[in-house]
Image (cartoon, rainbow, N blue to C red; front, side, top):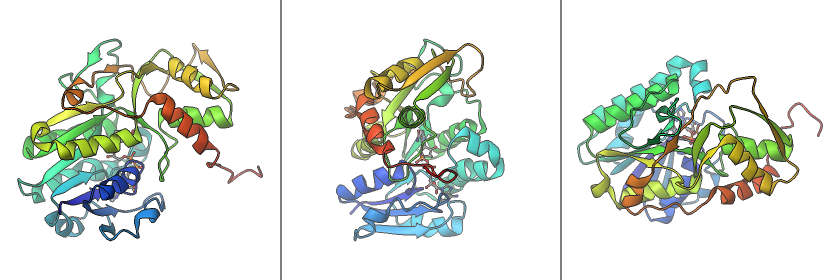
Length: 312
Ligand SMILES: NC(=O)c1ccc[n+]([C@@H]2O[C@H](COP(=O)([O-])OP(=O)(O)OC[C@H]3O[C@@H](n4cnc5c(N)ncnc54)[C@H](O)[C@@H]3O)[C@@H](O)[C@H]2O)c1
């Protein structure tokens, strides 16, 4: 039986991916330090092929025995997002870069690695140019730089690697993240009812969290033809501007209003469209549209309430 180690498997992506790996009869071990106090894997603890370790991926003492028994490693553990990394740069680099480099030193050449990275580094100021896997990556944040460096180390030193350069992920997960653009806007449309947009014409690209899980499964199933390279993963019909995204959300939440401001800059300067042709040529096609995701997020917003400092 194929044994998979998922680091950071209790996170937003992991807690959707891990159940789908178990559905496919893999033996799955998750290591996570549960930095958000999450219990996102509660529903699968019953599973006999699921093992869970509370630990830090930066400790090679902890990682060595787990890596030794893995046929496939999916490293998801990270401090994710530019603002979080800027708050604690040492923790960010030791987790997002150093732990990957140390892990590579422990891998045997036959062990397969499938790692997600952000495609955000493509897009600073490229406007209408279609970014492919050959386009230069010029990450501007510490988060982006560390992820790009970790990807390079893996691809250069461990040929049995596939990297998935993910568009901005959306959709509900047992460990929810409201700091992702579609999730954030839809939640605010349902709760605040309004948004002011800066640089509303900036284009971004998107992918549903369940399609990300499907992309990992696709990479497992098609590892040999895909090995050794990066693959963009996004919805090819959803390279949308922030204004267009708000219009789509408005179709689901008619009471939502948004306005555009000429004053003010978005701290996130991404403006880019991405080609997903390379992974599509290997037979991968997303199943969930942006509208599917917005519909799901509107439903999910009913459950999510931030009422720590409010009576209502
Ligand atoms: N969500 C996206 O839009 C997106 C896009 C591109 C790439 N990615 C990548 O996917 C991966 C997962 O992202 P996510 O959205 O699930 O984020 P997340 O923050 O929800 O998950 C990260 C997980 O890692 C764990 N973790 C953090 N530091 C750890 C440590 N030192 N040891 C063990 N566990 C640790 C956290 O507890 C958490 O469960 C990350 O590598 C991220 O860079 C995500």
